[in-house]
Image (cartoon, rainbow, N blue to C red; front, side, top):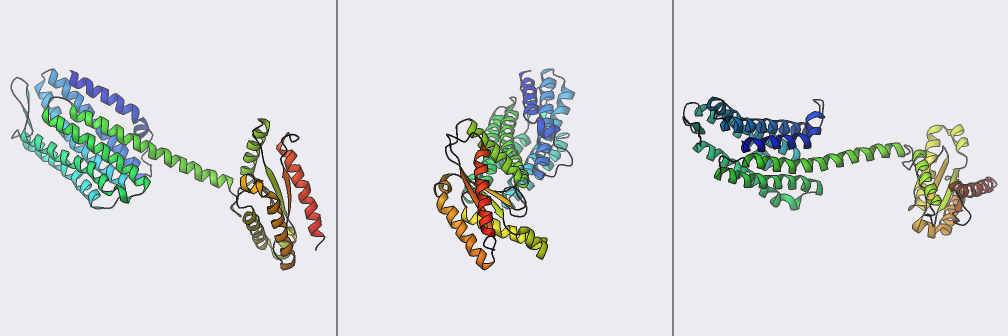
Length: 388
């Protein structure tokens, strides 16, 4: 009965850790890795169930049922191996000799188990039961387990051979396969030595838990990348590729929070406004106006290359100065205005800029700093118009 008890525990653990894979991976899932992982998980569940039934029938000495379930047990082992190898090939995503070997091995083991079980119905080469209901393993059992041992041992060694030539992401996959292969190789040896103890099932449980851990890490990284991509789209201005008004609102809120918590020591805000954008749009069309905006943004980013730049309106930009750009704030605003003066003569983009510096003793809100920068920008804008 203890044999079946371990199988029951394996089923419970298996269902808990693979809940997502079993119930939330739909038929429409596009990832071949997730689809094959689900198939492997279901195949392993089938194996555990047949293992539990074998323990119950064998303990009860119900020989016909024990015999039938032993056939089911060995077939489920072959099916699980087949599904396991298919998953590993997809998970590794390496079109090399080893991946082809894994594919062939999975098919061969499923075919071999089926043929041996068919022959065993006439000649007991895999297993047999005597008249008292005692189970006796046959030579074919040792041969098939021996073949599996060699394959899992190869899975453990293969990552050590190729890991130095792979990327960090690939090394993660190879580590999962190597560790799980080593675990299975160890427990297959124990199963060969002790046929009536559930060492093979223990190996499957440990190996599948290892693989599950790495698959979850992969899945988490995948979701984070997706969220990062969505966030980039939501927070990026499509015309200039700098941060947009959504990003500015969030950054402003964080600065406001730091001011309220007395956590902000230094901050400079530079407000920019493009001169003559309406004139360019009216005279040359909006396509030329877009190019004018892009050229202006490039100039801003070129000078304030260490600062986050936001496009907060059609012709308005804001830069937050911290770190090196804050220390060099006076020289940067001077360089920017000098470039604008050159553009007045050469026909380049003309952009008015005004800077405000955070004063911890008098500024209670972010808008206090922004208002000073905005006022100075308008002063500069009037000055620039006087040149025209």
